Amino acid sequence: MSKPVCLILGAGAGIGGNVAKRFAREGYHACLARRSDRAGLDRLVAEIEAEGGSASGYMVNAVDEGSIEQLVTDIEADVGPITVAVFNLGAQIGDRGLASTSLKAFEMGWRMATLSLFRLAQVLFPYMEARGSGVLLVTSATSAMRGNAGQHSHAAAIGGRRMLCQSLNAQFASKGIHVAHIVVDGAVDAPDTLGKLLGPERFQALRETKGLEHDGLILPAEVANTYFHLAHQHRSAWTFELDLRAFSDLAWWNHAGSPTLK
Image (tube, helix red, strand yellow):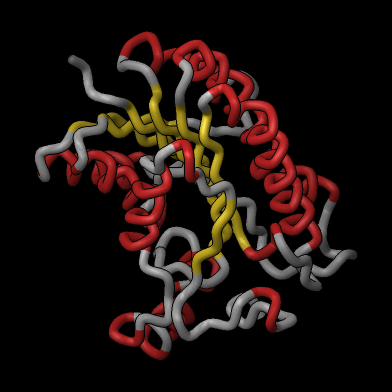
């Protein structure tokens, strides 16, 4: 019997890579897809295999026409049925005022955050619907719930992502497909997302003052435990939306800004 397949779009060293490792430990074949850093992708695959799991890596630019569609079609044909798909693509371009947000940047945020998710669902859900089951876990952000100054592109794109998840859930939950929208309401201890956004010095300073033994940054391995739980909920008690944050952070509805990006 072949292993169930978990596809992770946006498999970096943070949430995506840790989700891949978590599912691989439980007997899934992890298909890791990312846009850049082939060496990092190969390293993640090697780490999974060193732990006794199975994985394969794919270099995919999700905004390229046909890229997601070809990836899903190839995996379904050559690896096995995709039981769980994790959409973990970010669309953060940093803190930019209205005048400094170009039309290209604004549109790119939508293409990455919303259109790519639509394309994934459009190609994958017919397979899942025919099987009568499947899981789509969608990583989201505070911007899905609240728009801040300087976050025009991100808030519009991630807000659209949330509404798209609601629409997918409304159409496909009754057909056995579990859609879950996960609001990551805080800073994640991830070198290739927050680390790149802040730069190495600011990121390390944040880790030393808030993260590490302080537990004030969200740990990707702990997020992966939540994702695995969501993927295996009984259908009589499915979660559609939840939010995650460190114990010391105020929730999105309790404060007006994001100090991490300021």
